[in-house]
Length: 250
Length: 95
Image (tube, rainbow over all chains, first blue to last red; front, side, top):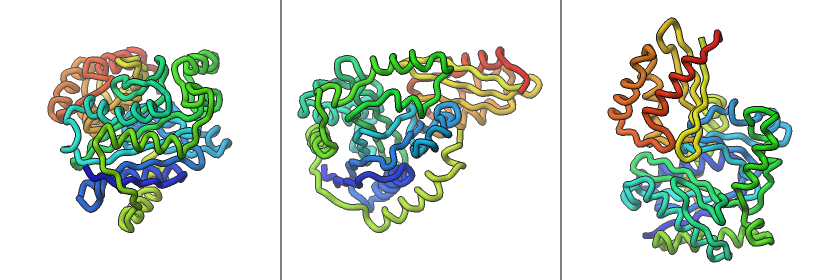
């Protein structure tokens, strides 16, 4: 299947989410090809799932103090701290992926496991939406289906700072914070922790892109956002993903 | 009166309920958490559908709405939502 490869660099949270939704709209109406996008976050950001309560999950004051953006995704799932990681999104007509949602997660996540394999990290898909290595989570993913399209996005952790993460996320009580942090350190890992050395964003990106191409039989062609996509992404970033109405929806 | 309850559900996901009850009926409810629902709007449909419900009607109304919307839920189901609402109801304090 022909697929556009978009590399949109490191941008702010509202723009990143605006681009994902804009590309979905354009793929849905047939004015853009299926798209694999690779991106990062600058400044670092916390994204929360569609169904999460922002007040319950995020320490908004700490995010403000630390210059961390906060945004609500259109996908479900949990809170994610986007910092030293690679994020992908794949936007594709629904007819090109298994109708069964679990099987579609398996297909897309197969791209990540292949990519990690090429970096020397053996991993496996852990239903519904995780990829684990040595029993520890290294990638989280989230999917939505809208307008006859599937959008799945996710992260691959390049480096991990759990203490910093939990300065930004709320915990049930301060007493539990240390225990929760230790628990997460036992259950989550990163490319650096697995290999004992850092892997650059660029190298990880190449690995993951090749992984997706193989797993999903994609003929990738580098491309750019169209003028129309840029315009809609900007509107969505400004009116939706920067708005209190959207981000504080729950 | 407001009630809240957090329920740990399948796959380690969390279901967090907040309800407001007026007399013996639900005034409004939020079904929050790190679960997945397809389509996502099904959760909002459920939240709307159970407004005005008494405690014993909640489960049936949730099941009906899930059926009407054709919703596919991951991490939660009608039973867990009903249970969490019931727990939130029982633990209610004056808002």
